[in-house]
Image (cartoon, rainbow, N blue to C red; front, side):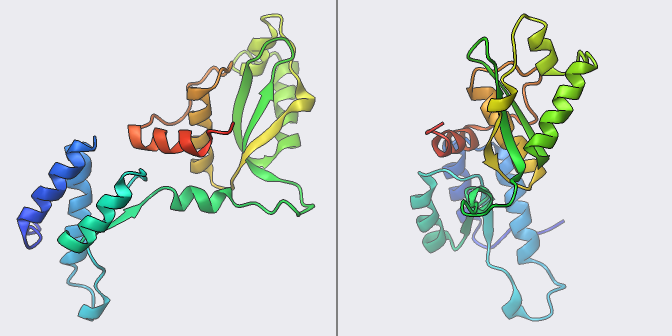
Length: 209
């Protein structure tokens, strides 16, 4: 069993701060255990190669000030899982003539204001052709086919990517966010459930949509 990090009072201070921000005790304990493993890693050949104490948390704007305090008082670096991961995936070359591949897309309805949200690592025309094939096969598990059976028509030609990424997990995260926030006719609620911090970050990120 690993011993506690030196200055246990600092861990208590951090726990109180993060508990007040809505993090669960299990999440804090898990991250603290990772820090202890790094701190007491006896396999590192040279002490100068030891990593500093780090705590990985979902991004939240008001954690930026706490990041400075924790680093200088408690000697622990806060590392944000977001926006570092998402921002790197948001960058796209708008001047490129290459076909866009991978991301989250929407397929609007001609009859109502609802849309279908999906994710793919393929090109959009390829994914739309798969949906159309499901409709022709009368696939009852396909959201678009079910919407058509309710006397609606699909605006296939207005389908478009709303987010570009080649990461399956990030695509699922963004797809789940739009299903949660926007009026849609998806049968599935999405792959992810959100904590308050991640949801607030994504809402701010996509506030223009």
